[in-house]
Length: 222
Image (cartoon, rainbow, N blue to C red; front, top):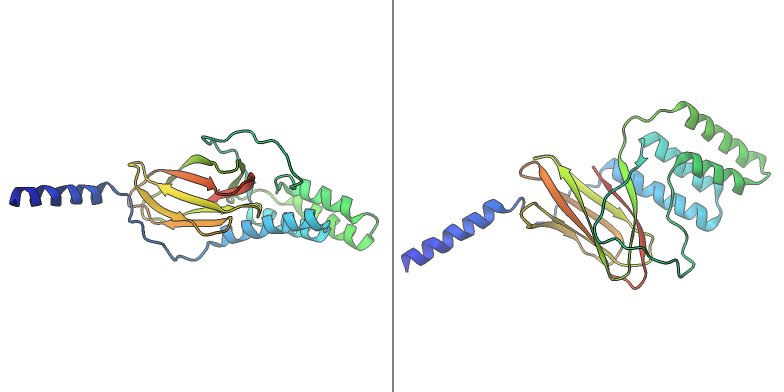
């Protein structure tokens, strides 16, 4: 009996060592960069939906001030989805595109055009300073996609997701040993996972769409 108990204790200790981090919800505050990216996305979507040039200009200014850059992200399980409804196309946070669309929406309004002109001058003079990268992905209905990222030991790791508002999205983070580290599983498509890795390594990010239509999401990591 003692040998059996000792064996069980050893197995439990090994399981604890193999886990990158315990599955406890981290209540760290949202980073400023992530908050600003989320705000820029909201403003851009609002601007296109409500034909507001001011909202598009504000979104462009946030992108420029923070040095956000659209990147490509390799994913597994992402399939093409036909546009079968009237949803808006995925948001594009490229400042020149936002400002060009803002100019078109401004029409002949001199006040609005002056605001766009000023923002375009900022875009011409401001260089990229190495801000957060983000990617736009489409997650099919009742499906999941998987991506990978490297995070450093002892530093706050953050994965943020902003959906298009149509379905419930969940995010799960696993370490290289297959252990679930943390997750975000509420009933919205705004997800945030934060944790402190015990060692530097690659983490698997699983994004699941719980709804009956696809969801165009923006995902950012710190």
